[in-house]
Length: 266
Image (cartoon, rainbow, N blue to C red; front, side, top):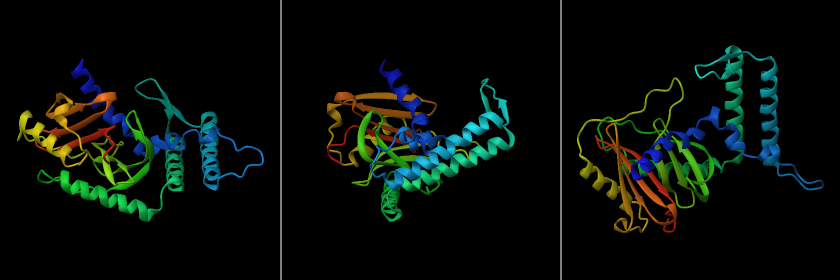
């Protein structure tokens, strides 16, 4: 059961970061804004008004494409856009996503501070293997927590190979994982050289968590170990579903870190 739980966490890695990709993120970013209405006589927030207008623009375009657009059937038997319709809708999704993201974001100067904190984190915990490319970090969007734990003030950032979730109040990275790629993107860097065994990587995982200054005693948590195709996952489980997970390749490249719920000492 424990091993299945570890693999479930691993399988969720690709799913939870799809939101950083503009084409897939539009309605996740918008949330339920489009369904909300402003009470009669109330003054509408100008940002919300712009978001609603952009959302309606996208919804109208989707409705028009459904009636008059080009479609085909993919390998899963699903009806999908084709030809010029596919290109037009992809561009519109991207444009609307970017506009909404910028409307809801903190000022660029504040986000730049957070990007610097991520770069510092990368300098400490990535780049431990030769030839790993330096990551160019960009802002993606706001979110409301980590996994099943609600937390205000968390933002998503992404780079060539990784996606990050950061507590902006403290600048601490709460989640960093190899991210899924869009079609046409270069394959992510993964050093799979067999340099380390499981025991060595476990100690490296403990060192990563200790360096986060969370005030957590790992000896009081339950450790779950997982392994899959040259990658190793170490998950410490606490009360109430809290967990800390660190993942490495057998080459010693950090490919994942998640703090799910251990927020008290941020």
